[in-house]
Image 1 (cartoon, rainbow, N blue to C red):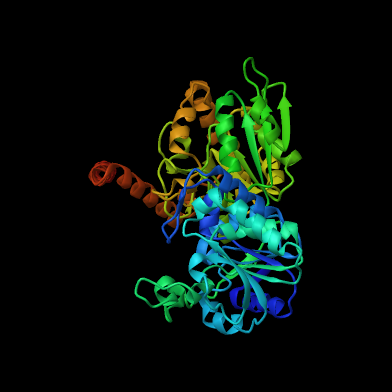
Image 2: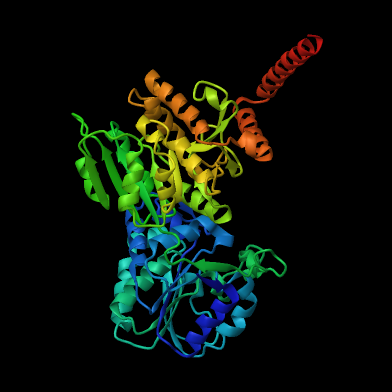
Length: 543
């Protein structure tokens, strides 16, 4: 895995500029990503992009230049971790750099290096740059951008592009200095396609001090915090790993009797910040009135339809047969994840290898599961930290190679057909020293959750849900007892520290949901339990 350093990338880019090597530098940060995922975005300058699908599509299109002459500078993990995963799984090119390449730690060097550029240049920047001296460049022409990027995109951008192509479309070896917010990437994309033999550079706000004054009249110092010596942003020298295949995740969805949920689920997977390499669909049985919606059928990379209902284990066999990535995430058919859930699982997997899932079960008296004596962590009871649990459900994020261990060590459990795969997976992984976790699902950050509460409650409580059938509950209980016979070790028995830490997270979640009254109820139940245990001990001692 290659690692980029902010200061070294600065040197690399300026070396190319000094050599007058023709290349394009497009820079993407939080604003560009917000527009591309359809979020409302308001800039510090006062303009706003909201419900502008054309702007969204135009920016998304710019990500498709897989050309060695094009460098994509993107958000680094220390500044915006979610954006790092988003960009690196949406941009095919691996010719990457850092979006803040001219600012933060590098801004103290920027003016000196920039003013070594002494040549003809075309300026595409805010109207305030009109007539201003921009370093030591000889500005051939200044194309003005208004203060409102959204309005400019709608009303003026196409005319601007036509004018630039008319004036300089046939010129080569020319420097284009661009500072136009998220419009810069659209401009560079179009100019590069028209004529790649120039230098199209998005300098962004790094050149603001040449033509903008801050509220306090202090120029750049009043505009951007990274220009203030000692400011945390001014001292930040970022690093960024460049992933090759490490981010590849195969997502497995399954269709049973909830086709209405499949559309929502597919949309949620397609909108993940960590974009999956492939989305596979397994249909578990053919039932009257149940079929893959025609409008989404072509959205899947692989579809397999079983004529008979083979149960919950078969989707994992399907993953073993057809998934091409080293990492796999299998979802229940009623699980609609938040947009950052895959990223959340991947990030935690890098910190602590393990099996991750949407909800985690903490067993108190395992022989009584699923009737009583267990706790649930996850979106139902949000946990602010990674929590070790006995087993997970609703989704399973894991290494594909573990499936061999999974099936080899759970043969007797597979007879339950609609039960036991969740606890069986953790049982199998215990045998090779792999633990089971729930990733952080912070209370007020539902984008990190493994299931959206609205959909989870709706689809999870439908009549087709397995837990609604009393016979299935018996199967769950029998499977749990058999797991214990096969050597399943509960967290409470093997790691009391982790057990109590996870239990505490559960009670904190309950307090968050129910308020202070929960603490009194919990303390009262503890006191009753202590009283019963004390009376029992006294009775034994007196006998």
